[in-house]
Structures are given as C-alpha cells and as structure tokens.
Image (cartoon, rainbow, N blue to C red; front, side, top):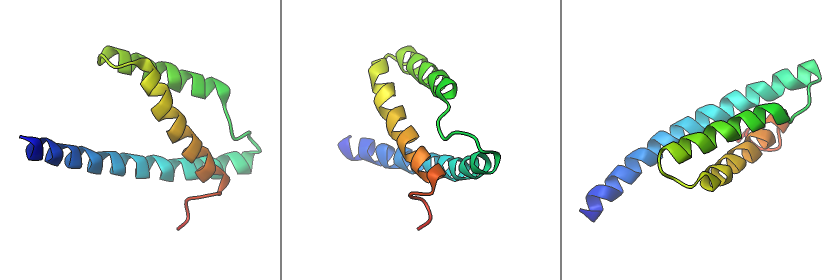
Length: 90
C-alpha cells in the first residue's frame, strides 16, 4: 500500500515538475516583455488576484488557505527571479 502511494506521489511530482518548468518558461517571456515595455516587475493587483484564486481553491478542497500563500509565495519569488534574469538560464 505504501509503495503504491509513493508511486502515485512520484507520478504527481512529474506532473508538478512539468507544470513548474512550463510556468517558468512563460515567466521568462513575461520578463522580456516587461523589460521591453518598461513595466515594473511586480504587479500587486495581479498577485492579489492569484492569491485570492489560490486561497479559494485550497479552501474548496478542504485545505488551509494559508498553505496556498506559502506555495504561491515560493512560485512568485522564483518567477520574479527568472523574469529578472537572476536565475533560469542553465
């Protein structure tokens, strides 16, 4: 039973990796557009919308919305670093 559940976690992890990699590639492109157009790196309104959507989804699924804040904050931090070109081209 435990091994079966671990295989399921591994499968989910692969999906997560694919999604995160795809998101960071798009974030890199967003960074290029922002730089070309002289836009600020951070869009507070957009981040607020994301937080609300993530919190609502976590709550709907019976999870503590505070967990959504933790996960999203990490994703946004890395996305901004990619947009700035600090990390991402390896």
